[in-house]
Length: 345
Ligand SMILES: NC(=O)c1ccc[n+]([C@@H]2O[C@H](COP(=O)([O-])OP(=O)(O)OC[C@H]3O[C@@H](n4cnc5c(N)ncnc54)[C@H](OP(=O)(O)O)[C@@H]3O)[C@@H](O)[C@H]2O)c1
Image 1 (cartoon, protein in one colour):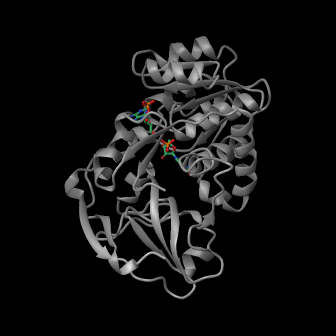
Image 2 (cartoon, helix red, strand yellow):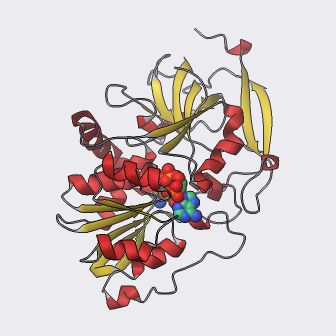
Image 3 (cartoon, helix red, strand yellow):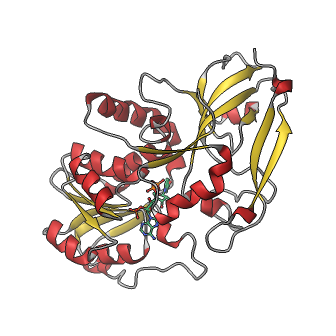
């Protein structure tokens, strides 16, 4: 049994709302004792945290699909953790769980947190800790339901995904191939594009940093784009809109090119392409599919096991690196799902 009183919990709290890219001054580093679990709750030791582009949005004031993180609060984050104290029969000391512990070393999870289904045991036979934050975690669920439910790809159709070498993008393109579609990625740089084609089996990948996206789409999508899974927004969304097939579906998953704007979000000037092509554009939020996660996890774990799906995680180490590590997402310095390792298992 861990002696909780002997532990110090290092935390990272939101200190200010950033203007543009977050800086170190937007964070406070605090240390607190670790209290025993409340009746019906657990205390966990955080092993790895998921660093997500959405974190940037949670730092902003204003209405969204989830309330902003308050000034002074521990930064919100999901992760994988180990139960070190339990006051409920539902969890035992030593269980590995997927949960939302925040950016800190230890977290007390109350009965409320446990009841909402936000905490569940993970099985390392299905995937590693980092894969549970990637293909089997929130990004994988996003790719699965965004592509299949919203994108509704049909065999033989062409699926284009931006952010193709990232967490969501890698699942989307590989799943599109598994479902019998052509998969065309858009990613930044030759190394990422080569990996997407050579390792993940996409049919093609367009390097938006060095190439002309419109020309690439014309070359690789001669029949047009049936499904565009948009992770980035901005100029790339506009370029794909010029190449839609009739009845195309655009999945608005994210718009990372816009998250640090200090000017209004750039919308596509050519949205009437939707009209011309009888196409539709639809936003999706992964949390809406929470009750169906187990179905997706089972299917994706099967693909990981039989080798039809690969995963890549980019692991950075140390809670204190969080402010700089998060920025990797916005420069494209991450290669694969960005994971912050807080402690060894
Ligand atoms: N709707 C939902 O429920 C939901 C859930 C999860 C994630 N998302 C969204 O899905 C998207 C991908 O998230 P992720 O976790 O998979 O991140 P990720 O793709 O692993 O990492 C972010 C990547 O975005 C690319 N990027 C950064 N700035 C860019 C820019 N200005 N233009 C084009 N690409 C840029 C970079 O790749 P390159 O090197 O290729 O540029 C970077 O590696 C994000 O927009 C996120 O907000 C939405």
